[in-house]
Length: 580
Ligand SMILES: Cc1cn([C@@H]2O[C@H](COP(=O)(O)OP(=O)(O)OP(=O)(O)O)[C@@H](O)[C@H]2O)c(=O)[nH]c1=O
Image (tube, rainbow, N blue to C red; front, top):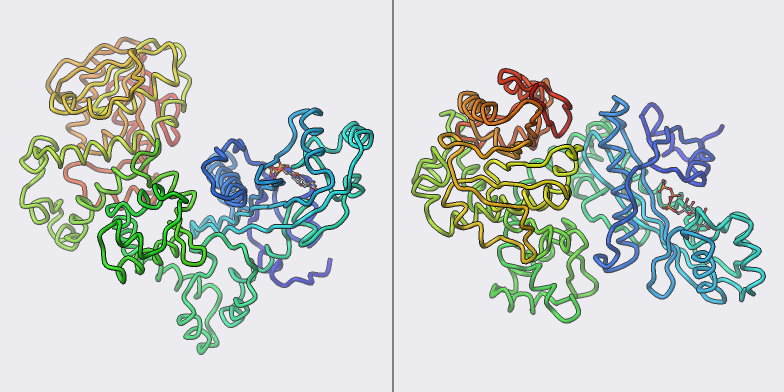
């Protein structure tokens, strides 16, 4: 096959994966000579549509989740890491209503009769994951389609052909459904399921030599990812242009370097916008949108500073701007509103107030091999909650809010990672606010969960109790290094062991081993380092501000557990172990 599009040939030799079961997407990409593997995504298309301001944001987010699921699964299940994963999601939108694939014939009838005689939009969201660079480029395309007036007889005949069932909006424009269509405005293949033209342009931006990036100006509308793929600033591109022997690889390295150099600025923008409640302020305005001036007034900050902050937030995908109006993005609505169910506010403020000051002393920390608590806060931190710094009410509360938000975001995944149906009781050791314990109770109707933590933590955990608190969750005060542990079938250690030296971990595990009966299990939830300790960088970066704790690999945790009679039953991102 002759390759007309040189961009496609840039992917030669790379492991490209299409995270889609759609035969149409496979055909469109095969037709242009792309070589790839198909690994359909297991991501269920169940995102809450109400959380998205526009239908295309929903399609883009679904595409991203489909692709990410495959990118994460492949190294484990297929034992290979792809270079690129492509995900897509097509939706039909009529009067603001998102139509996906019909669930049955009646549903197809409802959809098609809604579309009859009118114009609607078809949006396809696409996500391209660059696995090694850990980057996501996403975009969407909109095409307008007008249906002719359709009689009931025609509709039922079409539905009975079986064609509508696996197609968004209940029709396939490329086949019989083409007969229903009066006109199409825009990219036809976008309706079929994949906006090939825009996809190739994006690939061009990612893979073409720097000089050709000047064609940025005709970039199509609808790019929803402000962070990518414009990998470097224009100033930098010009500089690269001058150096003719600069390779594509060199450009990638440079962009990675720039990302690393700027990383701290991006974090601080997030921390500051959260601390000033920018996201809450925008949410509580009547329309969900505000101009910079109004935001400045609400957050009691200067106009100039606020404008800069808002613009930086837009560039990071934390906010979006239409004209002069700023609004939250779907991601911000998900994670950055103080009262959202998945709010990360608590953890972000912990990073801002505690981790950030510690990292400003990283150089000394490296020279001395110690955590720089004393330098940053004037106090040493041998034992959280017991030293003077942590004894301050607001500091304790902030720490608890941080742990609470992490437990809320990850709790369901931890609670449902393994089949615990044969167990009756669980004990969450160091469970802080009880958020994780409630997630376990919710996920396992037959399980009673005891939350065990220091008395001063239990005392304050009332602040975090849900209104509909499940009475299968109870709270017991104690020190897990000194006091007797409650009896349980499952001991949960979520983000606990990394805080302690091997010596202390042994003390804790021997107490668990003593308290539990044969057949009991310990569920460990941690960031597991790769066996060669080359990643993930989240874990290795966290280690830099640790006191006596350390990050370990799955086999290091297994060894510690084994020495107390626990044999590892499963050993992946989340590891439960069973005692025999
Ligand atoms: C409007 C229209 C849609 N489709 C198909 O509708 C599915 C949408 O569903 P999806 O959720 O985006 O994809 P999927 O098929 O479930 O696959 P996956 O990517 O694995 O989720 C895709 O197939 C598209 O081609 C057509 O074939 N022709 C058309 O005219």
